Image (tube, rainbow, N blue to C red; front, side, top):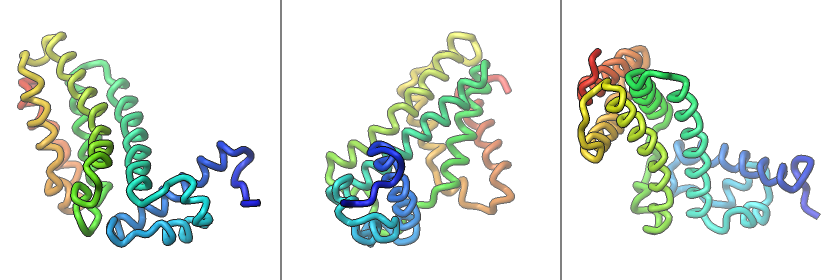
Length: 198
């Protein structure tokens, strides 16, 4: 009988996923997706290969589950941070700060770009996790218009412009001691771009 981690099957499942995701995170950013094997992840996580295959039948399933977990935790963090601010200007500033700080924490994995490493359906599943982040930005922009904090503009134009600006890795790849200055410059840029008085 396989060893159960935790006090119940649900606790066991959570523990296996947490261990596996910790190992995958490290291996993904050290070696890249192409070099990862399920057997290697299982061994490094201290779980049996059979146990891993029960949770994730292949490498693609593992990556999709990992991204879903990371995205769900980030959306919760983003929601809490934004909702702690009452003013839409501060909400938008908080959104920008968190997006860039998180971007600075994650390095692009080496190897093949994920879009080409995954089947189209799996990549679409991963990409769908940007939807709640986009929805949060849309709500902030609408709230600012409703309260007269900036002029009404088409959110379908503003959102891709803002996300493109915040997705530029070169912003956060400079010296660590300059990150906060870069982040605050980006906050001012986005606030001016939407027409907020700063």
